[in-house]
Length: 551
Image (cartoon, rainbow, N blue to C red; front, side, top):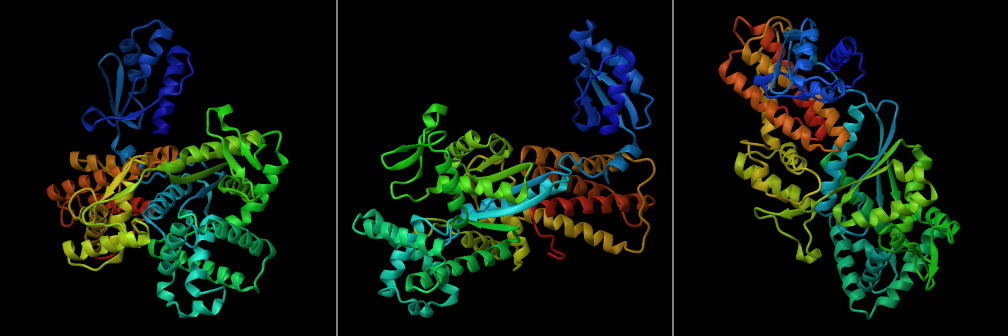
């Protein structure tokens, strides 16, 4: 596409002495490979009919070796058909490295220790992995980071319930908890502590406990009974997180606990009282109404930092650690307004950091097809339950116990939906080998691998004149780099999903009508099959979807 844009740009310069940046869009196959409305954009400026301009431009570029032919359509659209060589060359093209040399921090997942991982954490993790991969595919140096609340009221609620369960602050009582049950045991304590807090009777005790936990962390107390319980159970949570991330194939370069961002956040907020923040009834607030937002508390009346202040500290910590060109934060859309206030406050202190930060939100995942909430843990859908439901559905529908297929089913079901809106996850639909699903694409890759394996000793080339079906397949394979560029720019992995599904359908149609092995055109068709397999594998990799060898 770059060569075509250059040819159009030069043609306009030669014909009309105008400098332009031509915009090309993919057209339906029967109308060419690309189309541009460049002539209509120039019409008013040049005082000429767009079709007349289009005819002149089309005639000028017609002799280019990258083109097979050009056509003018309608009021002045220029449709171009690439040469066979151009189509074949495009299949191996990498995405434009638009983020080359840039440092990008992608923050996602963000689970809180002492609480169970729910489907929202799974969704955010899957989306975050994919967006980070898209940045890497376009040349960025990416740091994947995670953030979680190891201090705060939710911790105090859980610790209060733990103390009640153990009958005091003796850490020895924890030894009776089975390692496999620790995460669930902690989640139950949080539910109990939250219920007690809402019932008012224990609220004061939990608030006092909250202060003590902050002191434990600040003083690095490892000796007191409460401290030993805190550090042990916090580690239980981290071990649980690590096992979960290992199961879904996520990795992080850095984990920021709130205890690490609270102090720098407090320092920044206090330094800006009277300039950005103001005192109100013993607390420190940011007056959001001035910016058509909500007023939010950053330091509460007990002198403790709120989530807002910890997030401020996190933004500055990430800047200190990475000096990023862009910081991407991925969350559910329920905290959109919250993040807008935090970023607006940061903008008043250091505008550059707010400008470099992009907040991306996704909708909720709702249960469908038998997936149920856990009332025992507070009416949530656990992340593990989603994965287990897909695994069971795969066994029932496809008579196979393949964790890679079940994981691919879940990830693709999440990613194929456009970010922002809610979605319904249906385990049975997600594992279907028919239609727009992860297992369908995984099977398509396995099938292509089988074809190539049978021809492992045969020659494959990417040269020569293309027949119609070959041309259609080559054209689709060559779109991949452009799709990746757009998906990265728009932070929409769904573009990759749509493309891969269409690509697999195109190859299946080709294979149904055209023999590969044993045909006179075998070398070229093997070359196409190999290029198709490489693109499909790379696309799945960018989505974080496993590529099984057999299915």
